[in-house]
Length: 369
Image 1 (cartoon, rainbow, N blue to C red):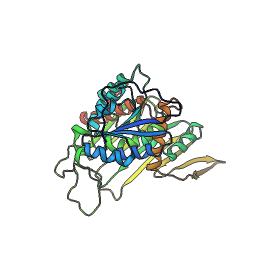
Image 2 (image 1 turned 180 degrees about the vertical axis):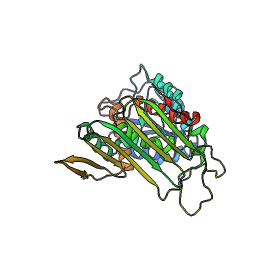
Image 3 (image 1 turned 90 degrees about the vertical axis):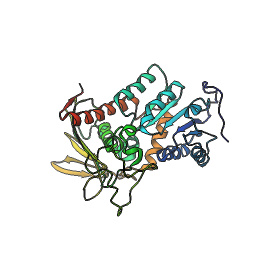
Image 4 (image 1 turned 120 degrees about the vertical axis):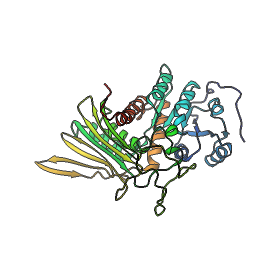
């Protein structure tokens, strides 16, 4: 049954062993990944779900055992039992709901991208300043075992000084349409939707260096290719084959303050022979690819040696990635761990993404220093 608290208040005094109570704003596909991870995380209780479609919110709440469902997220934020919130809405409301959640005294996990623009990202940052509320960004690939195993090699110095990275995610028929294809809502196309995953993964492994210059290019030639009916594709709930205002392809060269550089490309729609993902980093002692599967290359005894770490998930494990992400969010909110994907990283990634679009529009390199 749906209930609504009268006013917002601080969380009630709870015993030390009380579960961490969470709410989710948005009840679409990505919310299911968050809710499934929360359900599978010990010490967590799903308390509420909010969605502008109350019937859908109630269905999702029932599915995941949430006590309450709301049509207005403000009601969820006023719920005194909710301690942490996942923001799983369309991109155009990530900033507004994250800020509202911070102001309501909640810890916040914001799905990527953190925001559509630098201005929105910085507004979230200002809202969080001076508070003890955690804001974590949904860079889920950081939490996957293949990434964390490679990070342990890098942190131990096995690859030496990292000076170059390549990040690519190409789909032949990957435009979901609907709000994903509406620049006003999504903020951009494949760069903000899928390119951000590989950009952030490579940047995180490089040690999150400050970007100083970006040369970017975007192309809008193929649209959503709705004429192709011989291949399956994921489509948004509001899919409309006649509407598309986002790029097909984005590419960039990014240079960093420490002298390192990265090549990035991503596409929703490209005349490629197959879908592909490739993320690699290179140092003066060795190199590694983390996607499509974890492998390392180095030198031993004057010979080139390839290393294949024996792990259960050599490529991205979707379910485990989300479970690890949620576990880190909860632990960080409770002061037991550091967040692997802090707010300041989300702001910096937003600046890089915005610079790609700006450079593409201007037709020249953009400086960030």
